Length: 496
Image (cartoon, rainbow, N blue to C red; front, side, top):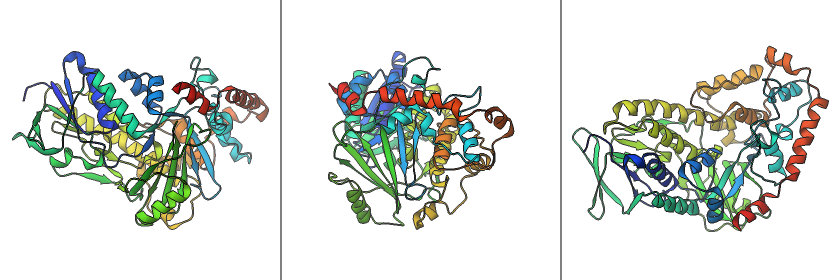
């Protein structure tokens, strides 16, 4: 083993593995770092399709991926929002859009005006003042344009992706960047007396040596699972869903630019549009239904499903150390979290970006690893809290599963945040959070959570704003959304 890192070995075969390999090759190619992927195949817990946060656009840009080419070759579609149906009981629904709510009133976020309206008995939906939400509702899409203060740039977007097509695309792109690939089962992890991994023995007897190893093999943790006991924080008391089924489904006519989740008796179902099909799934708790009943539910909810894959386990929680010796876990090898927030690839990218920043100057990486673990712990716990908040905000949905999801007090940081919002509509953020103040406003207001009051200094700033003053903003948003092309037509032109 040399004193510096000259080869990184990535174990896995899914999207996380290829994003990590391409990202490291792109970042350190000029330093001569060799990146090799031990392709162990698609992780067993990989979904048929996935939705992403807007950060995926930035990742693609860093990798040199041309978005139009990606959309054309993978059948991807665009995502302006997520619609949550039934989470506060039958008949409830709201959007969480990827964009601003209204326009700031001075330096005050517009959603504070909506809070005051609700306190005065005149509740309005944030959707009425969001270009992203309005366009999503009427099935329209265009990319943001203009300077940062323009209403036409007040939103962003993510993607809906076919997993197999996306992985194949990423693998081809990584190869173009010079990433090497070996396809074989992993048989044994060989370690030095000091505990660092020296090489990997494959089933065919070949040895793959390296100085830094990344486990991107999903929940199987093919690498990290062999190098020591797993110390793990278990989140299942707050997030009781422990299974997921996903399958390809028929094309959605005039497909919309948003993901839909639907609350069910034992969890929640999802469906996302693709250019040539769709994907659907059911995330559920085995304590409240069986795999067979879950499949029947999904088949009833989404007629015409293709043969679904097996139900895969979902163990909500994270490692207490993501970086051990010279091994780093990314993606589901590091944290398992139901895909409600669409942040699984985002979390992997956070890990990759932090690894690039803390790339070890020598093979031990002890100092860098300690800081990496601190930062990624905060990122993971923040994503946990945002996911749990979907089950906690607003009116409780009736049913044994939903009662169980609220049975215990939430994590302290989330409890403090919800208490503060309920007291005076204030949303405080800490370091290393993925979701911004406006994201929390979308969730909490959408769920129907009305605070007891509005903080005094903010109330003084917004109480003189009238409905007549904000009406032109709403009208302008309606006009801009109506002027956009239909999302399905926009995607079809992209695929032409």
